[in-house]
Image (cartoon, rainbow over all chains, first blue to last red; front, side, top):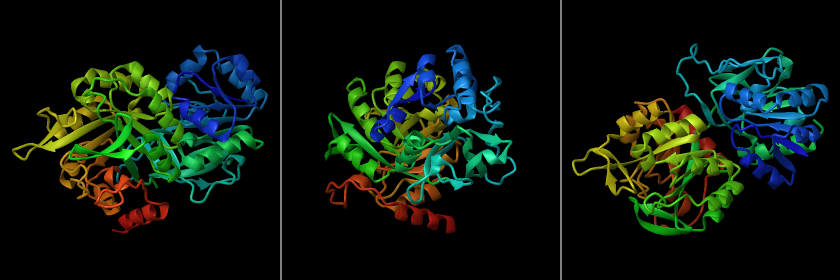
Length: 206
Length: 258
């Protein structure tokens, strides 16, 4: 069973819709016991960094998530804000992040560039694959993914970078560190490309 | 790099999809869920789905239909029509829709828009401005399917929406709607110049070149179209269609080189 962490940030409906299409059992839950039983965990998220951390803390989910991911090495997939929460901190807020990845979250900064691009980065974009990870296996031809975000992750260890995407400059769109996977885009809204990503996470050894 | 979005804009009236000309002459197109399945199979970038009579008839959104639509769409979807309470928005988002659009509500109830932005975030709130030339030839924002004038200049209204925190604007030209004669580039330029949030242009697309134009010259971030994607010719025979990736890629490659 895959637990989709339901902590009041963003809609889980579209993740459910896609898992259902794939025939994969996913349960939205904020119950620590149910999360403890999960074989894999999806940490979604749309909204602001501090509100998300506050909700995780208030719901007493931080402890069980830390235990599952860091001690028990349960595979976890962060999506969008869920990816950013895995870092140490964010320019968007003042609360510490989960800190599972040696990384920070920063706002898009185009000051050094010529024409200023719109923030958020919203729409379809492509990946430059930096390392082979199970998550990105067997993607259909010319993959593209749907992004909506104003902040992005900056890794201190380049080995954690699985793919980058160009928006003004190359930012990290997929990361992987041991059992920890994260994508800045929305696989649940990225047609057959995102479907393959969710399928890989659910069905391959991660 | 970011790929410009090409967005089918579908109009719901009762239980069926319709396509209008200048917001009138509704022609029945077909079953909404069936059409949406086809756009999903064709890999459309995004969908806009508007219940055009909900506000006029003072009706709630059709939540059951919206859930059905969301379950078929593995792409972003924007829904508009009849959203009056925070709880309406919550139900729509919970079903798996990313964005909601407000038209007359955005003009008549600014406090409601601010509240939506505060709760759900800018990126999920779209303001839809319908624009029509009045008898003096001046552009004006109209509401309730162009039945009611507001006296607002579209660029001023657009700026106001941006200041209220909406994440995106859908600008619909009533005069070009269904004509397939090209977008109103002058109108789009004047609006996009004035604001920094992305604009989805709608009304007038008759071919893909028109979409490239409104992005290239009109300053829009995406081009939405109705007739282009539901008819197979100007004779308005119904055929749900969407360009394939090669067509779209070559369209925007040409833009880069222009």
